[in-house]
Image 1 (tube, rainbow, N blue to C red):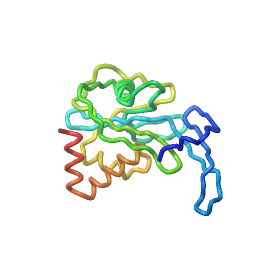
Image 2 (cartoon, one colour):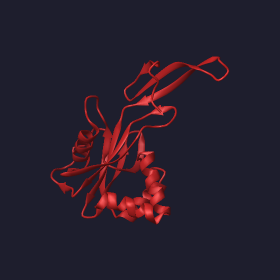
Image 3 (cartoon, rainbow, N blue to C red):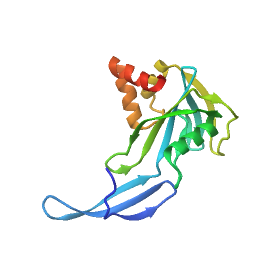
Image 4 (tube, one colour):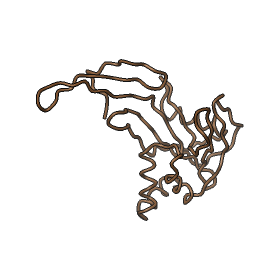
Length: 184
C-alpha cells in the first residue's frame, strides 16, 4: 500500500516519517488515518563458489544477528548502486553479474521499499570498511543452511524473501526455482 496523495507528513525523522489523512468511512463519517514510511533498503544474496555470504552482525542496539549484506538507500541513490556499495563496504567483495530477485513495499501501516539482488561470482577485492556502529563477521553457507535461516527469528531480511525461503523449505518445486535464480 502506498501513502495516499492527500496525506500530510506530520513527523520527519532520520529513518521514519509519519503521514496522516482524513479517510471517508463506509457510513459517511471521517476518521484520521496514519501510516509510516521508512527509507528504502536493499539486501544482497552474494554467491562465492556456490556458497552464500551471510553476515554475523552486531550493532549498538542489537545483539548478534545473521543478515545479508545491504543497507539503507540514501536519497538520490538507486537500489542497485546501494547494493553494490554496501556489499563492498561490509564484505570487501564485488561482483560483475547482478540480478534483481524481488522488490517488496511494506504492509498496510508501513510503506517500506525493499529490494533484494543476487550478486554472482563474487570476488574479494578489499578489506571491510565498516560504519562505527557495525561489527560484522563474514560467513559462508550452502543453500540448505541458507534456507534454514528463515526459521531464525533474529535473521534480518525482507519478509518477502523470508516467504520465498519458507516456500522453498516445504515445496521442492519452489526450492528448485529459488536455487536456479541464485546459482544459474
